[in-house]
Length: 209
Image 1: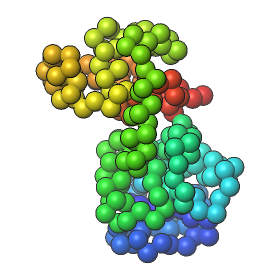
Image 2: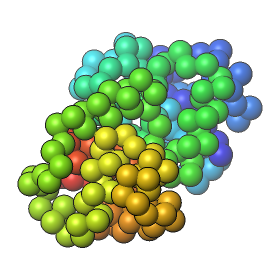
Image 3: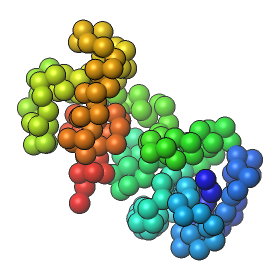
């Protein structure tokens, strides 16, 4: 898949070219899209030197294109990560990410996944401490889950793997996967990261107007 990089001054960072042979660099989202030869490229937004308003404007334009969008921040943080995900980004990393990591991110988002810095994912998982065993969901749609699905969702919010969930609930991993598929469908979520955020009453992009 083609990789489109957008930076404030249209300058290329050496690691981008090291990571990808097919790499387009531009100063504006519209310019990058015009240069694209692909119907659905990966859009990378280098936010160095941009204030929040300028970053959000670029992100909105990029998300509207329908392509997977990765925000590259000079100072990655939990609050900014959540904000960018809420606004439709599917990836969030350091602007100086190494080529190997850039390639990994590209593969993940191309296949519909969500990528964040591992340390941020761990912080989000620790938010599960706020989840009680039998929560009274603030999201009405959580009431659509069966009792067993809710138990699976609570385990995901605690950062448990499918294997750990299966052991905790005395069910097979195949059953865990089936429950997760049903949960994602009922809650209109993409993956377990969004589910963990939802279980902690943290908005995700699917619940933002």
